[in-house]
Length: 104
Image 1: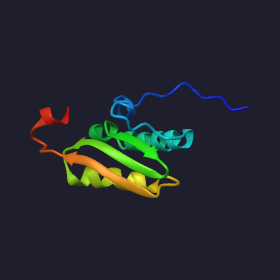
Image 2: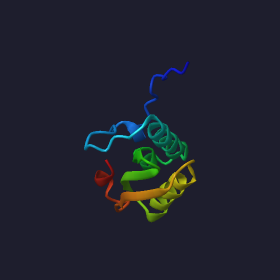
Image 3: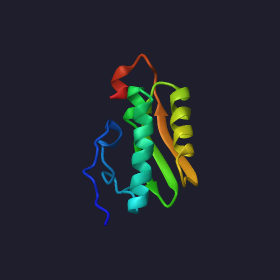
């Protein structure tokens, strides 16, 4: 018998799937999105921890803002390395590092 655990809330998931209709399609998609969100959080980069991750049918969508193209690429590579990922849609925006108000 399987039970669903109480969700662990990472900053990457605080903006919650579904706020603009892009919820994960299945429980497997949800678990995949959670695994990627955990991996982004584990990098220690605050802005990666705030990236929104959604999944559907092996397709991952990343949304958020980061201060460099390096972090945008890092997020994409982390998502690609997760199991059963067929494609990654990287919609992360790169904003200037000295304009901290855009990162919030």
